[in-house]
Image: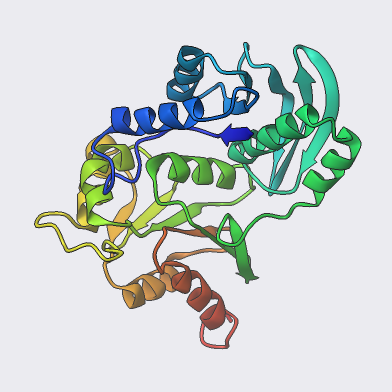
Length: 289
């Protein structure tokens, strides 16, 4: 009876033609809820916010902006975490400390708190559970550290996710954020090329691999270089490299990274193997001795 919707974005374009078709699917989903159902929705997402107002079902909105029933205020971001106070209709209801990084995790916590409060669960207990949550596999997952280099892997494969993950990385005191992105699906790469090109502003050095097809046939003229070209069209001075082969990426990183850098691998394919190989090699006597 409770539907939590975090956002509506242009994704899964191998199944949907455009954002309007995606929005219509969510509209039908909300309408299908029972009369006593509840929608818990991120009010900061313009597409979602307009939809819940249009449908008119019982709804609790959460977010950072004015107008949401549940809000996070006085946010303090730190490496691998945050703290903030939560208000309901302008009144303080609890203080939260998270041990997962990024503003996107604050949004996730607000969604969980909105449901918990509606169900009249003790918020002191909910706050303690959130504080003890250390993240999910492949979501800003720390793979290891070696000689001052930190290696993190994330499942981010959509422009919105990439921006959120890089913003989270920026909360750390790293000398540089070195990102390695493996595009996922030719259809997504082609249709969202412009958005991808504008997603790496928080990356000091960006490496783009070839596309992980995920069962799709290659599309002529579409490759990892499609995203690299888009990135350079928006940021001509960006430090970028197109390295299609995994082995080349590992060698490049081992020669390029410095003490204090963060290596961040991103993608829904097998790019996580690069992160693991870097840790395996870097802890041997061959490199960074």
